[in-house]
Amino acid sequence: MKIFQVRELPPQELEKRIKDEEENLVHLKFQKATSQLENPMKIRNARRDIARMKTVLRERQAQSAKSEKKS
Image 1: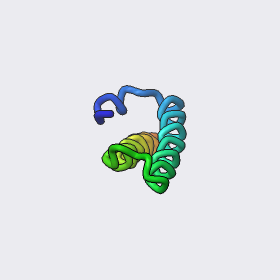
Image 2: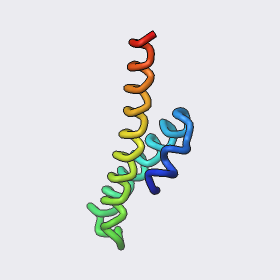
Image 3: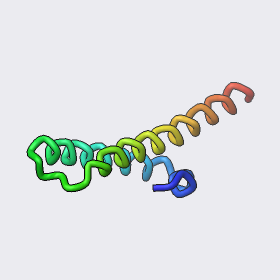
Image 4: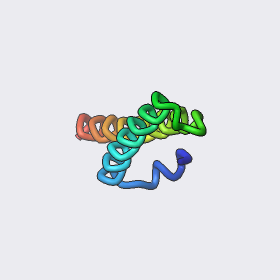
């Protein structure tokens, strides 16, 4: 998922997708441990997608905290 796609999502959707992606990552790691994972890059991509989503969520929280502080 590209960063511009992540930025378009509302916060509730981001939290839902983070949770889904973390569950997917657990399954991918389990497949790797049992030698059933065909493409190990899926683990890397899942981790990076989670990081992107968490970064955008954190940016939004910081922005709202900053705007509350000014008011």
